[in-house]
Image (cartoon, rainbow, N blue to C red; front, side, top):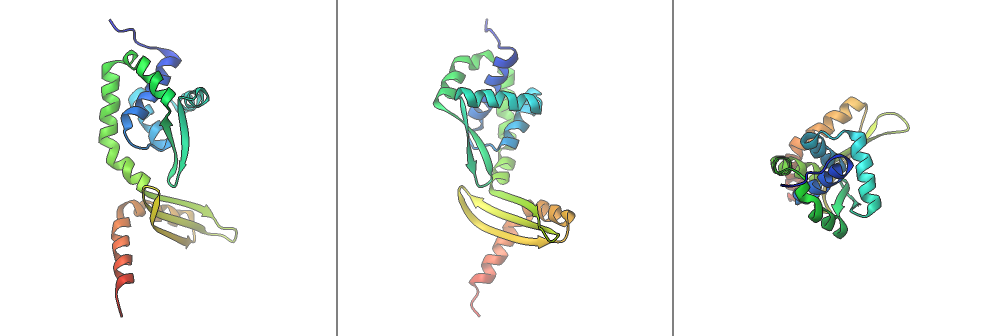
Length: 176
């Protein structure tokens, strides 16, 4: 009969398992979203456990154009290998199904990035990027009058970026 983990060791192995099962980069927000949805882990516990895992050398964060991503180190893989069976089959399956279901959304979030920042003279600078891996395919900086406009542009970027890319590309390659 398996000896299931409990408490902090269980939380650590759950997070290691999420990174292993993802089979793709996860931003910190995506990582937390999966931890919360599949395990019920709250934001504060998540950050405490991630800090412990980083300090122990089980995970490392790397900066990416779309944000920081956590990765398992070789030590993290070994740790997971020793304790993975301490997680219930149903939890492991739940994590795998969640990651599979949200993989397209997570990929889009990594490829279509937006940010905004207030301008000193008022208004907002909105930065919209389309990425392919580390390469920037398209980057647009726009100045808008308000935070509301910025939020609308950033929201619409997710749905309309491909259409905008095609229009810009077609217009720029046209000969007069």
